[in-house]
Length: 242
Image (cartoon, rainbow, N blue to C red):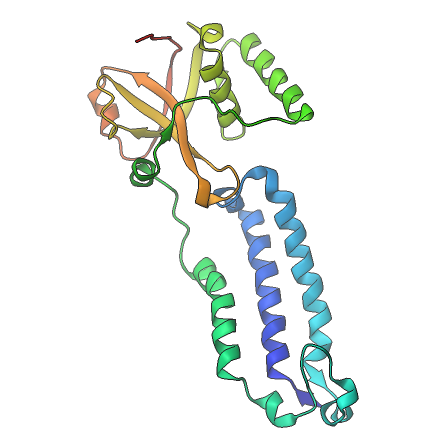
C-alpha cells in the first residue's frame, strides 16, 4: 500500500470545512456571517463536505497495482508514479494555502462583532426596506404588523428586529404613542443634534453587505450617549415632522 499525501490533504480540508460550518451552527455564530434565511443552505454545504470527505478517504491509501498501472489514473491526475505521490508541487502548496486560509482564520482568530466604527463607515439606512417580497413573505409581514398593533408593548428582539423596524418606519402613525422595548448599540457620531441612533447591523446576504438600521432616540440622558456597547431601552414611539 502507498500513502497518497495530496489525497490526504484534500480529505483533511474537506473534513475541516464540514466541521467548521457545523461548529458555527452549534454555537449560533453563523448568524454573524450570513442572513438567517440562508442557514439551511450552509447546513447542506456542511453535509456535502462531509460526503465528499468519505469519498476521498479511500483514495488516500492505494495498492501497489494502482500505483504502477496507468489504467487507475483518473481525469483528476495520474496516480501511478510513486515519486509524485510522495512529493507535493509548489503550485499545489500555494493553492492549498489559499483554500486553508479561511479555516485558519476561522478556528484561530476570534470573530468580532460589527460595532460603531464599522457603522459610521458603512452608513445608516433610515428608510424602510423596499425589497420586493414574495407572496409568502407578504403574508408573514402582514401577520407581524397585526401582531405589533395588538401587542400592548412592542418588543424588538434578534428574530424580529429588522421586520418590526421596517413596519415602524413604513407606518409610523399607526404606532404613535405605543410603548416599545428594544436593544442595540448607541450611535452618536452622526451629528443628529438632540437624537442618537439605537441600531443593529442587518445582513442582507452575508456580512459583506451588512448595514445599520434602527430608530432615533430622543433623550436627555447624557450618560446614554457615552455608552460603549449594547443597551436596552424602554420608551414611547413618537413621530416628528421636519
